[in-house]
Image (cartoon, rainbow over all chains, first blue to last red; front, side, top):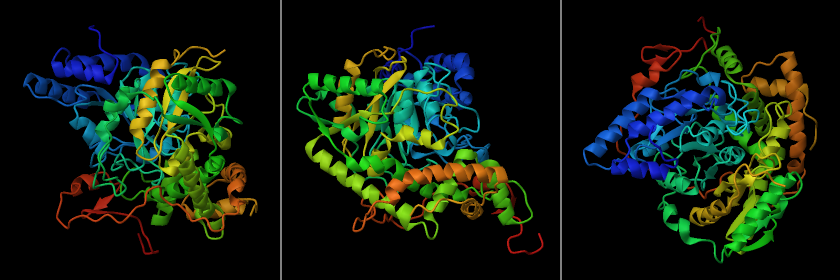
Length: 484
Length: 100
């Protein structure tokens, strides 16, 4: 077999120049999936026939002297909460099993139009609720770097697919860390863009004021390319920002000389594993060596982020998931009356964690508790926004761990939901503020599993964030280098 | 605040959310949801008088579009995905106690 390049940028260049066919690239990746996805379970569905047809179309374009686009022939995996026209989309939930959406998500249209080959739908925690993919109705995804450990979540399948080499790039969604945390645990790059930068049309809603779609990749440049491809205004999403998309690739090489980068005090101490904190300090040293000024900054309200999030996100979810009533799509459990049918369907169709969050959200919104819980959480959100504004008055970027620990073992946190929720303490504040953030691999922890360093930027600060990410990437120790 | 979540609260909430719980479910969820709400007491106990709420990260305004006809999703295709259909409409069991 001829050598297939490992990055999207190299593959697209080779396919566009005609030196490599999209078919060869696809066959190579399908063979890798065949060989190892039985063990990893990154995919709910591998779209073999559709992918072959798309690859043939790209090759025909090249043969005809046309340019298929910046992602020509690049295999790409889609989180299974992104609607694909006529192709099953499950959210890893029984309640949507077998449903074929009548339209494509905007991001799916955009990657296909750029020449990418959608290769399959990846596993997730049911409805994107979880941090390990253990909440999938179709079995967990395993971490390709150690299959006794979780890949993180909720976009665990998309992170694992890239880490295992099943696809050089993938798309996930991030409501409280669901792109960045699995990226960190699997040792790949993952980006949560500014709220509104990427259209959510066709992303099945979890918590609408927080959800955002973003890329996974093995390199910073590939994430920059994919984010450029999917971002931009879309009239079908009323939260879409009507502003020019950032030029990310262009600024990648600009370095960090003179940038002010701050450690967030509240996210470097208690609850953060010492080896993870040490890697973040080492990453900051690398940025300093490249000319950045490193300081320390306090974002006091970040300490309340977790509590606020676990009131706001379930409240929005309880409303969004009311639509699964057995009437218009997905499964139905028959019963004599509609009310009984609704309840029987939801009881059989939703898993444990989804039920927990629906009930939590219903409670937080119910009469007598609204002001104390949901109302307070919205005010805390204001405090978090204000604290970030103060921090960004003095700093261009912030730096924290992505996840408090490296990848944990299956079953370690499933009995105690709160311990699972604590995985998200470093990632949640940016979702509440609507800001961009990304995770970049930076060596291994004491157990030799990947550590992710998180870079945070103010709204629409992606270009600056990617400049620092490129420096971290070039300075990073090997992903399996044990911290000692 | 800190009135502890009771089993009855959970049963009420499950009913509102159209979920059926067994006795064992009720015990388990009461314990698990209590732990989460206990953690949320750090927020519930804050004095936030005078702080405005943020329900959304963007300063959103209503989005209007030109009143022109555009192609929507295909009706037959949508109906083909429904559990039960009659006369090109979604079909449900009895709603108001009438004979099914």
